[in-house]
Length: 271
Ligand SMILES: [Mg+2]
Image 1 (cartoon, helix red, strand yellow):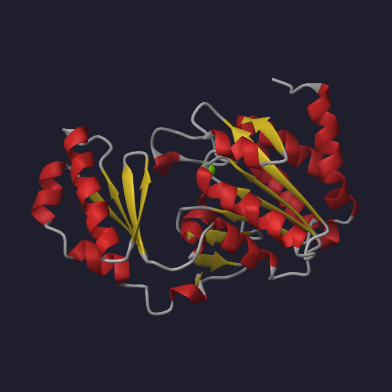
Image 2 (cartoon, rainbow, N blue to C red):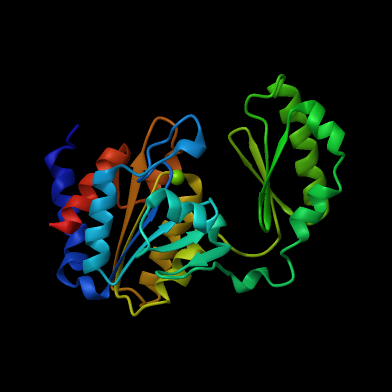
């Protein structure tokens, strides 16, 4: 579906500063729900070939092209399938620059790498198993999943208890859809991750696209960098779907319709 013409004009206006000076511009994007359509099994998520080719072309032209994800950075790179992009993974805890073989942990994590794993290791394992809660080790973050549990409601109640206990222990529980992430109590989010990526190059203009609440931190970071005079122009693109929270569109400069709509943004950048 093509958006109304007014949106096309607004898109051109937003993209002009980036297209006019690609050598000083960054194109950053969330992955799941933005360039990789949401699928039932997160393990099966993939970036369509056309999108991948667009990103490859953009990486050859723009100063920085990168993906930001809640996934591990290496997993993010595997899904996108491009070595010449920069990746920020695990909500900003991990950085993987083009050509890196190993992930660089964010310095904010120093001394807190084991906070969440230790907390989860102290939980009653047989209770978790009985509730059908599965543990996913994400390094400094541990995710507890209950999608498909025999009694998802009971599993969720237990997850609520675990979240409260984590808060008591000064960890940061983060609730998602049938998942609870236990994070260490350090200041990191996609906005901080975005600023760290931008700081790796001399960048004057930047675009960020995303579909979820965590991406609003990215939009906010762009606005702050602009207000501080570090970026002369910015573009925040909301990728809307039935599931996306209203804040995402509200905080963005422009809203497009799903990953297909975001492909049109990438095409316009590649023109
Ligand atoms: Mg997303």
